[in-house]
Length: 96
Image (cartoon, helix red, strand yellow):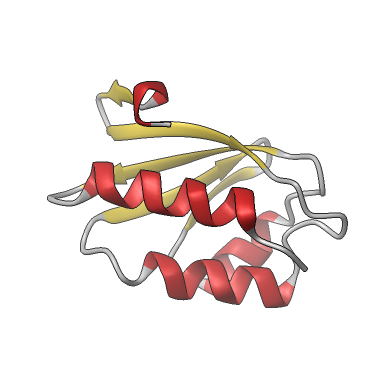
């Protein structure tokens, strides 16, 4: 997973595929936001419809990513690499 991390002008980026039948609805969005809050870095979740603060459940819900969405995690800060790996692992193992 770490080898897929890209360096961008806005921070480190990692693409992930969402594998939830119902998409990123309230319960998984809340769990994702809670997991993201463990890191000090600024973390954004980017989809085709826009970008959201990954530490905010309401921001994540505003994206309304569907079940098979391709998302990009963007992190900037001291623990950005650790945050991307942890959140990508979290998203790929997340179950409804």
